[in-house]
Image (cartoon, rainbow, N blue to C red; front, top):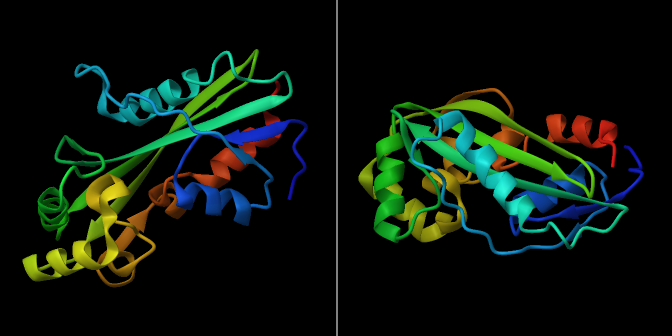
Length: 192
């Protein structure tokens, strides 16, 4: 565990990101500013999450202390070239899960570290292979686990992750919403 030479500010409401930082032994304060999460349609898919993470960090410009570092992140799910963010309805969540069944999808998490004088952004990619999921299972999952705040309409840390994911390639914590090993290394070397 590392003591950071600055005050870490997490610019995210995600309980999973908070939990990951806590488990990494990092002290931080939460400071969230609502941000427009849209992106240019011509933006390359592998840059979307990073673009949104940068927009979330940019919302803090002017409110960053000299000894503070803002950490923001965004996660998207991609299947067959289509981006799946957080669902806007229960029906959309069920349909998304059903679409992901028996396919490999991509999970991108973009991260932005921003201080008064410095910025570092990067993205991490993981692949996930779902097994079969019936329409009834998808409906029951959404009803019980309420994945409305999760990209791709699922959480790898709950029923789907335990019973319906056949394999993952890449960072598990990236699929949770924060590629912790990469973030930890970046935090240790970041210069305010």
